[in-house]
Image 1 (cartoon, one colour):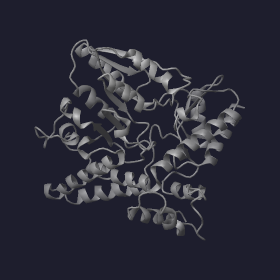
Image 2 (spheres, one colour):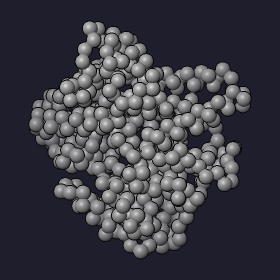
Image 3 (cartoon, helix red, strand yellow):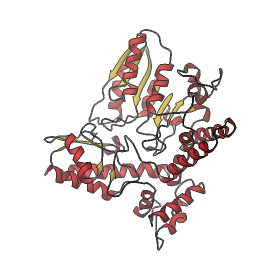
Image 4 (cartoon, one colour):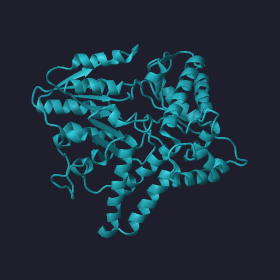
Length: 422
């Protein structure tokens, strides 16, 4: 049945379906006897999500709840990578490889459509870290200029700034936000207080990988813009999980990876640069084909020499996979699973404390707990080796479920951890 489910779903994707209204009808024959995939309200039901889960090559008996670090790609993406890689290996001539230039442009347009921006504002990188450094190393500063960073930033958006500060005499202001903020305004206040007349950039993670805290990004970008300050958002934990529109978000730079919540090809990432700021950003690496005066992000900043063309070419399949399911459906499903897991863990497992913010909407898809009396690193290992549960030892125990997970798996995680600590 699994092969039938996979084939039916891939056929649905092949029609270019956008949204979920058509998807259940097209996939109805995937399960013997048919069945209803949509609830009366029009939202996907568990039978539908079971069909989605069948699109991933996850080993039997394993529960993957580490989307904040690495996701499996669905079959449709893996197959596309193999198809492009085989095509490349059959003929490595310049003439044949020219087709990948066209495919890359199509991928850039697909990314632009997905994020609500123009194709010239998008570039393809290897990952978030590379994209962050393209911005950090590409901007000009004067000694004494200030950069405001969040203390929960990823090292590529934290330590990279500090190294640049040592080299060029910048001043880094590192802000902390309250762990139990009662409102978005409480999260904005430390950033606002740090802005001065010499502040040039505010760099922050959209969602913290070490606490799960969600920053009110649109409001912070609006605040920065009102003070003439640029914004760099590390979107590693929001791209592919939240239903994003970068124009609405209002940032000047946005970076992310394909291998996390987007569930796309490994070693591919994105860089968004608002068109008005592109000429302010110096290229830090220039490979063959770079042209002076190119006013596209991909051409000006991301011409980096030989890369794996098959990976970039397969990004479009990941985007279409999301569109076929429905980006809003994905966001709501991730929130639903995270809330269920948080509730089950705190209700069933004695001795746990919540590291993530208590408010459900403040943590999106990341749930972090810490046991107060037991070795959390040992629990992390036991969860995998005894129960096949793959999480992360970040801040204690970090769980980040996504659309290939189920409510039953969330309950299974809580029960497994309960048994370990009993």
